[in-house]
Length: 262
Length: 314
Ligand SMILES: Cc1cc2nc3c(=O)[nH]c(=O)nc-3n(C[C@H](O)[C@H](O)[C@H](O)COP(=O)(O)OP(=O)(O)OC[C@H]3O[C@@H](n4cnc5c(N)ncnc54)[C@H](O)[C@@H]3O)c2cc1C
Ligand SMILES: Nc1ncnc2c1ncn2[C@@H]1O[C@H](COP(=O)(O)O)[C@@H](O)[C@H]1O
Image (cartoon, rainbow over all chains, first blue to last red):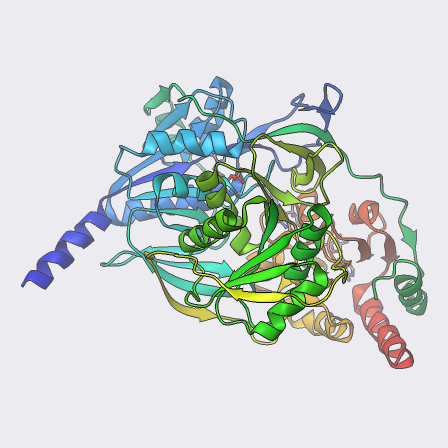
């Protein structure tokens, strides 16, 4: 009997999960990248911002699927200025219930993660999801930093996330393979391709997003550990050498003697 | 003050381990390697050849829970009074280095592509490889995770001592149920040579020639995103902005147009060869060697030429 009660208790908990999804903005993937102020700042001129694809396609959509299957609540959180509310509304249009914006410039990953951890620590989230990485600064840092700040387990680069009676069942990439993992909640998970499919927001979602709650929270004071001091563009490529399609011996010769890669 | 290098527990020394030890040696005199698991002493002692002064191993712990590895490495860093800690920017480095950064309040440079600059900043990939940033660390201790294939391993010393270390990793809340490893394949992120194909190949039945080419080269295979999405190829082969990012020595792109999101995952490759019927394909702008031609004719010819080359160079 006792056994049964515990099963009911656990599965009820996993059914009504409180999920926090960390959302960041990133430049539209076709953006031309340039820098200003003597190469010390990213040139935002003409840049369209989108929700970072990993956060939107994988983390947010999987959170919504879990909620649709078992009830619960999906909150999104962004560390960023008021201009970021456009991408926040987009994530709300896809289906998140409410949003939190920590009103600060996300200067480095440590600063960003600490703000999110500070917010999350008393809110009782069962799951904290992030994308695999942001496609602008590509650190893959924030998830691990939140997990350590809150002393929670981290499953990074997860490609599958399901709930069972006893906890979460996940798959994650390892060097050259895939691991199947079980872990109890609460946990921090960074989400990679495979976890869910992209969803296009519909008109109803877009209308509803306008009135969903968006709470603005003041940042806590945190030091930063790193700073980007300058940027550089890669060396200009020398022109492509064209090779006659009937002369593959020449290509092999060039790869061996000129490029020295075979 | 020492440089601490974490290498994953393994029964072979991956190239990434040799790269990180070489990197450590180039920035500090006393390089200590920390690892765990079952690797044998004889193999580990060869890390001295790449610059390690000693190797510490916790044999009581065989797992890879980031929380436990963080405790292990933090304890080693304390014991060795380390001022720099180095990881490979691979699946383990991406999980453990950020945790360690919080635990030690040590700034993390994620995805370094080169040795530190003379002003102490470290160059990293940003905007999906479209440009670089130089990162300054403000804390006393710094952590650097190095992108695979950024520097060549160098043999500078002789074998070193291997010592048992108690990492006090504590408990875990993660249970690993099973591990699936693709047999005999070269893992894409580690591969030095990669042959990749896209929608230009028309259907999954045409991949045999891509695999033949890869086999002659000893290369891994990859593909563009639509090809993985429609199920012609497995998802783990998808390279690009939303797939795997790679930086092999040689990337051969067959029937791939070269969209900006595809280039984002491969533009760190040292040499790129593009085979495409369309002379206007954007990929030619990024390529080192281009062949305007039909893949169905060009690829078998290239495979033959490589076979001939391999035979004559033996
Ligand atoms: C947010 C976002 C993220 C994305 N992420 C990625 C990503 O990570 N990776 C990725 O690859 N894409 C990604 N894409 C998709 C990308 O924009 C392109 O649509 C995709 O890369 C095109 O794939 P392809 O080159 O195989 O196909 P196509 O664009 O259809 O190109 C096929 C090419 O084959 C050539 N061809 C045809 N027949 C032959 C023949 N017989 N021999 C030789 N050549 C031939 C054609 O000339 C053409 O250039 C992303 C898109 C978005 C919007
Ligand atoms: N400013 C931010 N606000 C909220 N979440 C963020 C922010 N920056 C990064 N994240 C989350 O952390 C993940 C990893 O980011 P990064 O460590 O920058 O690669 C992203 O995919 C987001 O889910």
